[in-house]
Length: 254
Image (cartoon, rainbow, N blue to C red; front, side):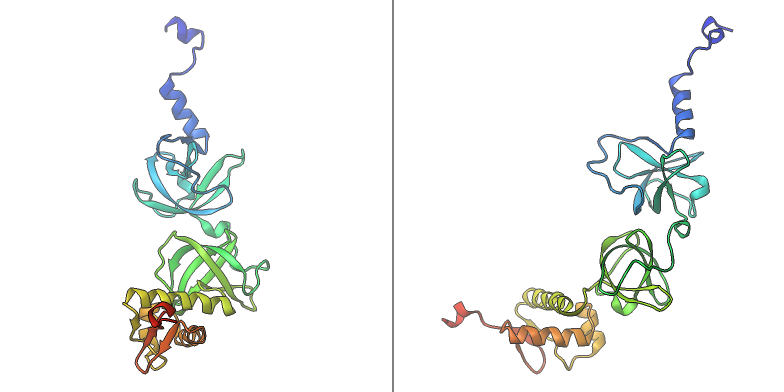
């Protein structure tokens, strides 16, 4: 045995790093990889897997130390380069740690939300009824298929709205705001589609609902109300087979 071993010399750098990883909930990350935090403790986030080890996977969450997803908190086998949808919490020593077992942290119901509330959504899985989403990092909600005004993907974070709170406390969601604000959003979509189509859109109040949904991602009723508002504001002309951008004052010499 060497003199240094007899004196209890500190372990090698490799051994210290190994012990640190086993004890901690994070590890030093590549300083050039992150510019700003991608998520924080208490949030659900879709994070990239940067390393898989015998104690778990490490995720890039934009902080100086990568985030540990321990083996016992995994539901799907992590693969480097792919993403994992996780809740970020702390372990018994207060260190940040990730979990794919979202059901441990999220409620199926909410007594904190009301119809019309603007909320932060994180998209989860697709079901027969619609798409499940995490609401304000607190509970689950459901976007019914006919409420999807645009394509969404798993892990996507976006703004949504509580459409209805059911009697059992579960939340029905929408990507469009309620009431007048919703019509303004639909009107903006119609105007954008008109400009992109050269000023004429072959959609009218006689068009089939599925065609309107396919072209604009909104219901026929919302479309009819929106073009009515645009017509009253003299922004469009409603024709039998479609709608057309109204001539500008400059072009008419007015």
